[in-house]
Image 1 (cartoon, rainbow, N blue to C red):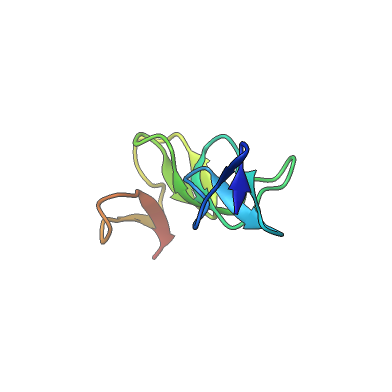
Image 2: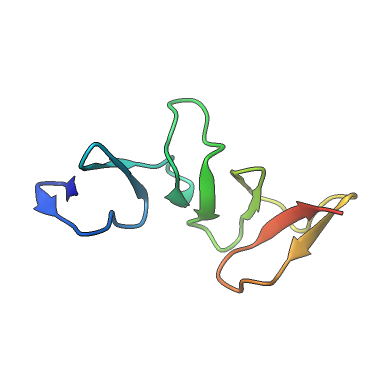
Length: 83
């Protein structure tokens, strides 16, 4: 995989593989499957520790809203999941 004129075995954080190149995720994503220009619903984790991953989007909230709960099974990411 190539990214910024360097060769990688695995694409670095903030990028995703696409035809032997690493393309940028949305700026909020630490990891993603792919990125869309105006749709960043493919985030798998968020760059900011203050944001929650909700339906693939990194959102800035203090806590999950009614009907959702904070899944703390993986301490490296904050996820709001449906009840």
